[in-house]
Image 1 (tube, rainbow, N blue to C red):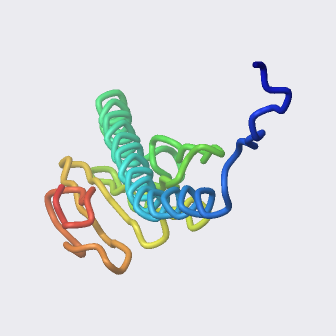
Image 2: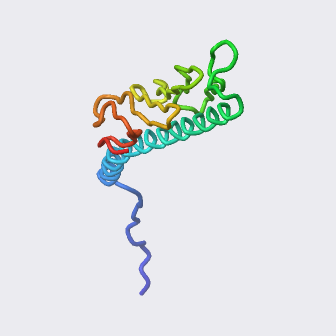
Image 3: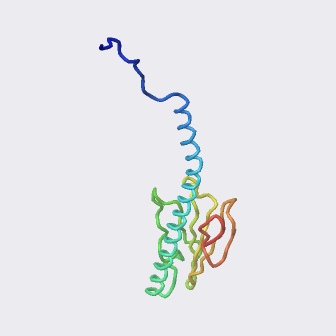
Length: 153
């Protein structure tokens, strides 16, 4: 005999408890990943700044080879400071120049989460970290550009 009544109908979907567990797991994963990603962005911006500093130094040396001095007419650096673009996290500036020496700095921009970072290079290719934000080890360091929070170059 065939039964005329249907089996109880089941509704499908997620319960509130299941949904809250998923939200909690995603929240924990985000809490772990976001600070790590922020550190990654800072390190990549530091590498960009130090690459631009090294490039500026090469251009200053080329100017010196062509002119036998680091200064242009009027005592300004032989190479103009590069204009900061929207993608730049550091401002590069030639802060000192005379006929036989120069110093170029890269200073972190606050709007790009780089407040407190400062690096420099001179005519001898000497690298120096002139400032770091709080929480970074190393402080002012001669001979290298600190690129990691633990103070390593």
